[in-house]
Length: 187
Image (cartoon, rainbow, N blue to C red; front, top):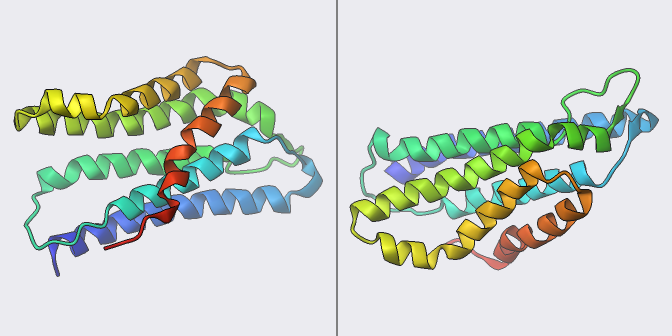
């Protein structure tokens, strides 16, 4: 078994559990029927998380036979933990007997949710910055990733800006990343 095969199993399990968490929460919302006051923001954010999880899982495909240390795997593991927490925060875990208002849930949960999205991208960028700095390629890397730093700023703005119109615009703009990956193939 190659290092890729070995580490991809754990990564796939964590991403799979994250997807299952979203699907179980969605099932509970649907089954709760009329006790749920639906609003676009929470389900759209959950779809955005699903697309991001699939994008991350797809991007992990790098079959080679080179060895990997625990230290090299830990940054990926931290990213996967953040993504799992993000998925777990996308939709409410339970629907109380008195019902739930998804607009209120989104407003209450938004800073935590978007903070996790900010942390996920921020962590990826930090790991890449350190790696490129150690290889003497930091300036070239920063020039190539300026767009990603702008996206990080948009994610961070969603933590603090509570206006739904801004959230709608930002989600629409940010969705171009995962949607753009739909034509990518493995190998």
